[in-house]
Length: 511
Ligand code: UN1
Image (cartoon, rainbow, N blue to C red; front, side):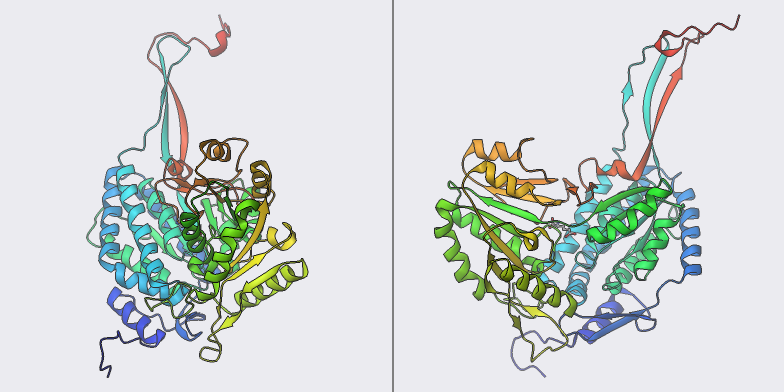
């Protein structure tokens, strides 16, 4: 028995079992796919992966659901998403903690991820009354043109371990109000959070007569399950989040059948610090975006591009701060950096640090922590690596807390460095000079999908369209008009006259 006021920290498996029970998830103990907690590497549950025949049947059920759901008026679809959002609000503490237990991100960020789900549900509810098209002036007398937007059918979602629930919710909430059914292939590293989300959605559907069965389906499995979705012509849109390697495997398969893809792939995000920057502000942004989520966000800050005139003021502060960042159990309130997802992620971090040293880098931090206590888990101190140039290791996305530091002399040079990588997700500049800020935002500035001023590259709100260019894949999810990716557009021309004039003034007399 605990005899002080400290919260009792249970074994991950015990905590997971309690949470799943409260959320109404049955049977997370049987099956071939094992889930391990990054906190200590222990087994926390098992689910059954969907075999080929099962996947096929589930997609067929999703098609039937889509055929029924497309006739439901969008505001009524929105009402179901509102109910789902309400379930998420009630379950926020449990689901947020489950994210922490299965993914390893600190509790604040686990809760933030569930909040992101709630926010997108709210957004989607409003959107359900705003799925509007244009009316367009016709060149022909007595004619009217307009656009109508229709559901696509079945939307497939492949999500990654690092945002195991929010990214699915961005896609699913919009897809549902747009009239689609959703088939979800979660990361095989986070199957339990997917089970919990599915259960919460099913509970929102209970007693909601307009909701057909199989509006949401989860197909657990490895890459082959994702590949089967990519190849399946019944999946009208495949929204895939993960590495550029995954995107390269999936996108051509969808393209070969002329399906649609929405890709959110790798990032290699930079932050430029100009001479006029507010350095206190910059420091806070740098730390959160570089080491938050243990460097495992697609928006994580990976490249710091500092002006040479202020480098000697900023870098000593970073060098002092980095070793002091608290690495530990993500459930404890003082922890800022939790574990990496698994030992392979730690090995990839190690390889990148060795390559950085070979390429002339000077490393602060990056060492293994808590190894004796948790030999099956992977805790690493964040690494700060000053590089002589933007060499090959800096150009790769390593999903770990490594911040490479480069120096620049002119804004043009900083912009060129920002843009000189294959990825194009997020970027930031810290400056109080209006001209510099506007130049960074301009067409001659950052080539990324997300371009910020005086905030870091990570932690976007759901209201904007989220996504990036080049090898990031070009997709846009969540806010703004990203909903259009989940619908098909029809252009309608209506003749209310008693003549049949042809467009472009063509005469075609048949006597
Ligand atoms: C991701 O890492 O895949 O902007 C998504 C952010 C979060 C989403 C990240 N809102 O950092």
